[in-house]
Image 1: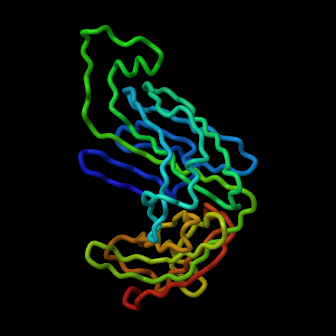
Image 2: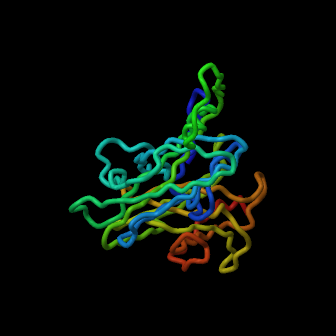
Image 3: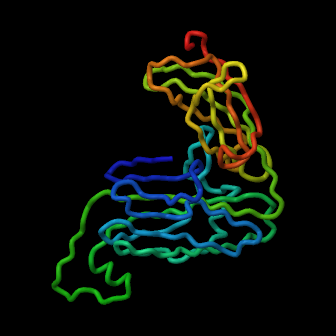
Length: 289
């Protein structure tokens, strides 16, 4: 999900719906690369490390903090209010909390966690936020263990765009049980700035995340005749029993659909190669053929 705030601060937040092992890059200058971009800690895990790389040609500094985000009914994320029942923020221990990366430098962020006493089985989550902060030459030298410039020297303060990126962290305890299903789907015509799409409701149950991969194809009887909508990885966090997502058609605007039916496939996992859990046909208006 992407948040854009005023005063020249761009916030890019990741939730739930992204390829797990592909390095994550900040937009503009591709400064920070993070891998993996999703962290999952189970009963047998004592901790993990995230690899951070600076691909920019200048040094960058980041403050790191744990921030709770909760899923909304449209699948986006928003800051949690106080008392979030499934927060993992208090369980995490990580270092460093601030770091400076020189051009081309790689560092590791080490994550440890401690489960709360008496916590119930299930999945808990938070997000690690990497916020870029202003940096001058003196700060680079001091962060790297060197001496600051002598008094009387000058330091530039460069005002520009600051970035924040968030990486989800999921902590699981005990026995997990979860399921994801296609509860309903319908065709939505173009309206104003909204392109025509398929709106899908996903239902989740159990004490864990619901995870699946959805794709849609045009069909004529049992014959598939081409892709219909953008395929998507779907994650539904534990605090939501359902979400609704709108998936756009892949055809060029104004072109006719090759059939009056879109067949949705829900796969059990993060890719289209996973077993099919469910199939659902969505009728289109007859005028689209």
